[in-house]
Image (tube, rainbow, N blue to C red):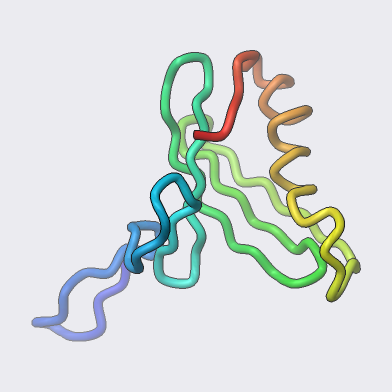
Length: 102
């Protein structure tokens, strides 16, 4: 959280701050907030998303931060590459099996 002055409200960059469509990825202060269901539990997934498939994904329940870098600038293919990497390889390696976006 960041506070700009003694009487300023606290701002959490991973708390939803802008309206999005129902069921869509939510938006915080400079962070997108996805939602996963993992082995019956619902997890928020804060993500910094950059052009070219640059990603920072925070998996709070596992105390895990996943960072990907790539050079696919201004290309639409592979937009979800980082999220797929997390769901198909990283979470299963941590013993998680039933994983889906909600």
